[in-house]
Length: 234
Image (cartoon, rainbow, N blue to C red):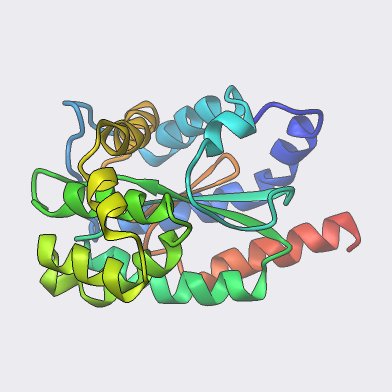
């Protein structure tokens, strides 16, 4: 995220670095690490954090967000990327608390959904991701996202069409979109980013340039918002 505030933002987030590293270290035994493209994460949390910070700070914010689904304030100082898999049970459990967090902080945070389908263990992860992309083309990503997680045990083509019908989507367009090369390319673009960041577990968050594992409590994000507001005087 290259802009005139990069230096100040990086200094500000030094106060969260230690907490982020501690949470990440605690998370390692709890989250499955799945090699993506033959790449494993760096050997320790500190090295992984440095790699993530380097990638994020060298990438323009608009490019990093891209055409991904978002919630919140496009101009917020805090940008929270969530890397997720629709067949991941941890992701389903995290979705509700994060939705509640965003309901309370629509002006403070830009929340960005990024696809990380762990296809080696989740056969429906990629089809579900493409179906959600198709729903996004008709402005219904978040409702579709919620329905996929609520019905996670039923993932499959019948469910994808059922949710689309329930949301009143144009079914012909939906089916065309979810099986299109554009859907494949959109998901693969996110996957390429995860390879740059060497992310191998879901959910995983990147808060500005801070790597945060998926089992970080919502209170951690609340604390970040509070501290940023205090420092900015808002």
